[in-house]
Length: 211
Picture 1 (cartoon, rainbow, N blue to C red):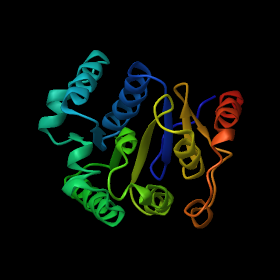
Picture 2 (cartoon, rainbow, N blue to C red):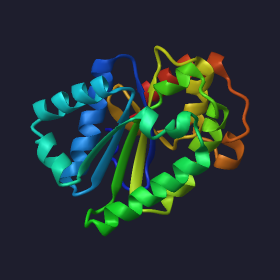
Picture 3 (cartoon, rainbow, N blue to C red):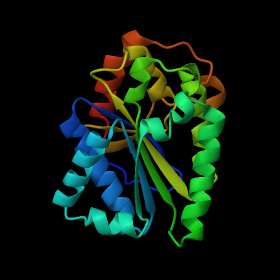
Picture 4 (tube, helix red, strand yellow):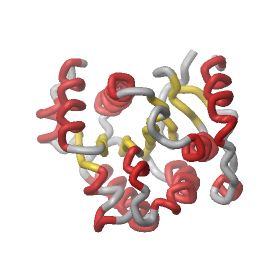
């Protein structure tokens, strides 16, 4: 049985194509909206956001209404992960902390974030800090009324990066099922580890076999 999403979670969602990605995101975001959380989704482009909204509507969510009341916020990676043209982990942590405070002050039960990490393919300035950032997010989410999902395209992103993603998230979403992650490492270790790209396929297979 897959485990439910709860505040404090930091989730690595692995997907193979846009159809699988949208199914994961729509399920995750719709759950948050039903729970009264503010949901923030960051995608690669405005076109991707449009396709997400269409999929959300098809799932029975009035996305326009949710956006108007501030429950649903949609941004591109360029607007959040790469604001100013580079990745800055300290800025991102401040942005997330401010977003949690704003959500609670607006009367929401918490903040639920979801971001596609495919921007890493282009290796923008500052991207070498992303593993350390992902490790730090575990402590961040445990201390606030929020949770986060990071989307990793297993077909496009290099195995070394996928291996780091598995090491820095306590839980994973594989084949649409949310599970505890036996390959998670403590932040102090994960932030400085050496990737094992040759073991990624085996790790994904092990995750698929877990209840």
